[in-house]
Length: 156
Image 1 (tube, rainbow, N blue to C red):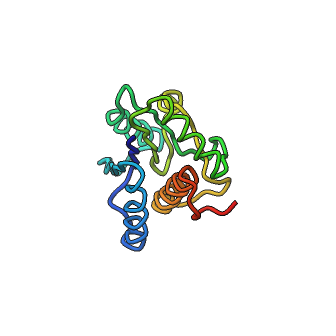
Image 2 (tube, rainbow, N blue to C red):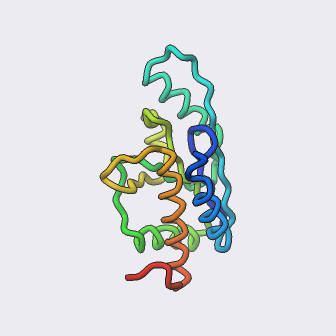
């Protein structure tokens, strides 16, 4: 199985890059990991709704028909780490080839994309900077795979 993290925005924050590289390497032990960073070029004088639409269009262009798409959204479902692991395991058991985790832009995604995704996931009731969300998601994906493998990284 492959996991793709699709994020609107530029390259990783240099202050977070080392940790992102570390967890990416760890996760690659279990699944193939691919990062897709979408640096959507936007005119300077544009409203939030138009930005949301253009970024959502760019995300949609990257999604493939057979992808299972999970949108990170503050209004999404809250899962524990073991529940996330079980969700991933369920997708693996059903033959899913690629799970795409989507991190939208600062203004979120449009309603069309909200309705298109397979699942909406909230990492917390708190709101985090998008660059930090990349690292938090990656750590949780690694944690989920260590749970599935029965390894000691996650202490229950």
